Image (cartoon, rainbow, N blue to C red; front, side, top):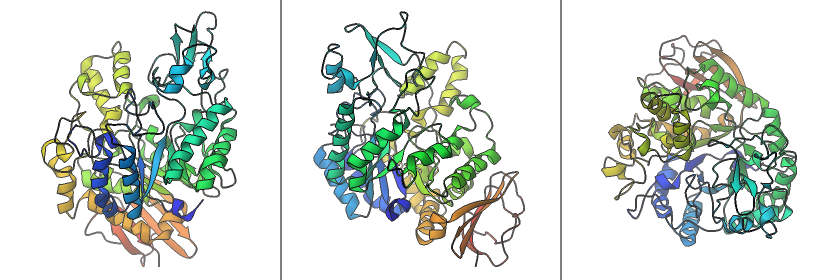
Length: 532
């Protein structure tokens, strides 16, 4: 793993909702270009760009119809090259979203594949005959219903783990794997620095298994792609791998594996949900939240590098899930310290640095997310509309996809036209407002990221959890003779500072202006110390 990869601080941009430069209501590449000074001032050094490829938009860009072009609503390849060049000029690397478990059903490969059973592209996808007059197996799609769709013309089913408009590629076909490698090299040769790899642990499948993840050839196929594309370019690759253990993650990301650089873990983001169902809320076990983070820090310490994530385009806002609306500044900044005080690579989702909370959707017609809409209809038999709307408001992916609020202007300064989705603007939580307020979440994020840049013990030190009880947390990072301590109060009450902070410890950062080195921790207070 290269040094720059260990020191990456990644900012995820959802291009459709970041900044619209031409007034059509959709964010675009030129809008991103205009905000590079903002990104640089924040202190990030890497951008992850969610899909901006041509797409029918059934799953908001994750149904790709052409891997080697830019969607017209976002701009052109020339716009992309300009964005890439200007990011690099400002010391910011760029990760693309690699979505290769599936394509759109409007991709040329699938259009050919469905023409006939003997079409040369037929084996690019997973087609099967019925079994006893039904689907080939009992797999269910992530967005509801069976994972198989009947094709009347060729009298077979095709597999789709997500929408029926997202047919799964057949990675067992070596021609498909070469097509993917060629496409990856197209972007890397252009200067792209790496990829976030969408649901990458699903690319190998055993149709006789009860589930679809972590198939028998996953390591083989990833190593092949590493040798053909990732390794020659020194690319940073981050896997989206739901449901894996630290041990399985190390098997994908260990230094000698030659597969992925690192991988997300989302185990802590499953808390506060009944049975993991994102629309059914329950209290968050905050002790377990910290224990999970610690488990992954320790589990990856010898041969892996943690990814530190609290929000993304698929998750509701962290403040609405794990924070406290009575203490918005304190809880948002405490969560930032709790997570980004640890060894690993921070991932920050657009607007997270403002302390944004979930917007309010007043009816089903205001949603755009296929998962939310499908879930609403599936649950309608069990719940009333009055019950369902709060559930959707809690769990919908649209919570994080509403436009970035730049100012108090119409549509939050996102667009001069009509936004593709509602603009939820809190006047106190815009970039313009927080720029003016030295005690804002935005300014705190800048200070925290600056501290990480200056302090390699925070970035790379070995983690040890010293205290985690009744909402009070203390952990340390050790790098050679250097040691940092992070103390957090994950509750809305005061508690004594845990034993373990020496009297001569130097206070490096706190989210309370009058913080004292040894005083009790107040509601959602966070402190970072250096032990002299």
